[in-house]
Image (cartoon, rainbow over all chains, first blue to last red; front, side, top):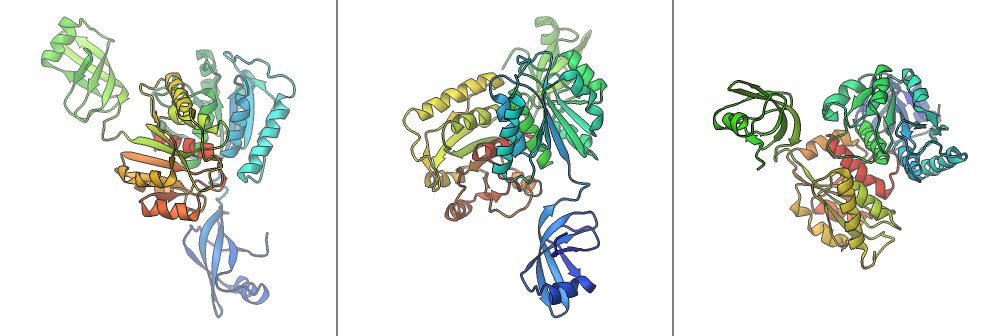
Length: 240
Length: 240
């Protein structure tokens, strides 16, 4: 915990003003010798952290929460992306964009209609380098784990590790995501997004995914390329 | 209007059941000779079009609206994407993804910090070919217009044609989009998304954009590459 980090009881929000009392107030004024306009970090009871600007008036120490540094752990959603390995260098693109858009881990896999059945040795290493470069470029503090490709059956057996598995499928019920996603996301902290190959998932695969708890979702009338679907879902999940 | 398209009074929704009467019912049964399970298109008073499944029981003709084919014109939002021409072949990528994600038109432009100042003759033609291919691939009925590159000042002078101009800027107030976008979008039918070059917009440009009615928005803590920003906004605008 940084010397300038202070805990203030209650759940706060950006823009609100909090009063700092007791030993914390004395530390700010007498030890750190901070004054009007100086910045501190305020952490609230939910674990959310804020960048805060001080107003010091004699012994009265207040802080305005100007920016959220870290959402409360309960709010923070971790999203893994499972992607059927696409043709050519498209997986590089998926890894780059998924990293840029905040994916926690990337799980390449092969499925029934995968054109690519063996990405070849060294591919996972290459994707890890792409993830590292993209993480640096985007200012992320961490690099997403990129696993070596697995079979679809192995992927399905891991669904139980997640609170929610989103399974975009062009044959899913044609209900707009905005009508389904909020309820699906309620309380979901570990989310997996599973994107099929160029030819889509087979019915057998969709059945297996559903049986294992995956939720089929529909991404709209337009046909998205396999390398676009994960990006779209990551952008929406960040927005929601 | 297709022979199987029928107008049914009122504003309807996916899943609802409508009764078809009079000449339309006779046409369905006697002229088109349609029966249980056959599909027709139903248009309601708002202009929304539905894929509908018939139930015919003697003279009683009903239809269940199973899918929205076209939203009511009032609901339909048209989104143009203005993109500062990026380096290399990244504009191809922007055109492809913007087409896939439903952009109505694409406006390439040059700005203060653009590395590329002259995309070269033939580039606009190339982008139009990319748009056409992407439109076909994605099942769109129309191809977005791709204009020839213009200067930033010309772009700004066109802001008044839109109900809303979204101007993502890394120095915008750090308010999450989910807190700002719903109010900005209220009633906005013609929307323009303006994405800056690799080096971002200058303060002068942001001021000019704001003076012309553009609304600066913040896309989050992570730094998005210039070619990613439009995609993210298009995905979110489709979701909202």
